[in-house]
Image (cartoon, rainbow, N blue to C red):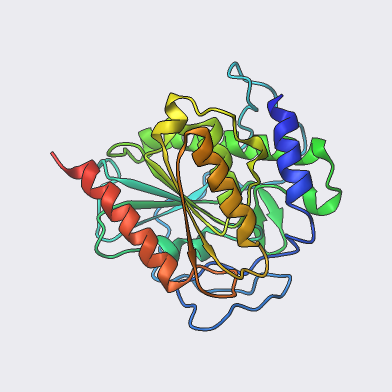
Length: 294
């Protein structure tokens, strides 16, 4: 049942034309982003990787096996970049923000959107497991053939990889409370999926210009789903990922009993605007304050 739902999500709504490529998320958005079909090189802003990649990221060549939870088993140990506003011991438990890049993105390019010097949090930017041009992606076959089998298998496997990373981080980089999950564009679509299938793992989910139609949302949220705040922000005239489906998703989630809200911002680019970044900062700060308060 779940596989069929995910297939509908991916193949009916995330069409190849909608994801011919995406502009990178960057804090500098004084002007509209270009609407080209490839992601230009963007230098990271004050990002220094403190965790070396543990293994080479290669394209998936086999369908993942099933685990006892009924979901796909993880097939990649995801590498990641780490950033903190001040030096920390790796064993120090900190509030954690996990930020997911979009199609063709990289950890270096997405990391700057979550770098806030006044927030004493650890930011983790994983690298998606599949190659796409000069970057990486969570789902690759949709662009090539759009078949439900390939898209569903890759979406399930990528979500399983992210679940495994969260569990691994509890040992490698201890967390104060549960992590906040942030996703941009296709990373936002993955965040939507995780909020439905693995809500118990996260403190809050923040989605920036991420697509997901309401078809995979259950009629009634369970206790874990209802307890997870899901906040979506979208540029009003995004030329790559339209805002209307994002709003429809949030409304459907709210009707089902999720703690879900939608915020639109002016603009016509597929990037993270200054206003969106300020919105994200305030959301993280609020959760950070609750996590560190005695």
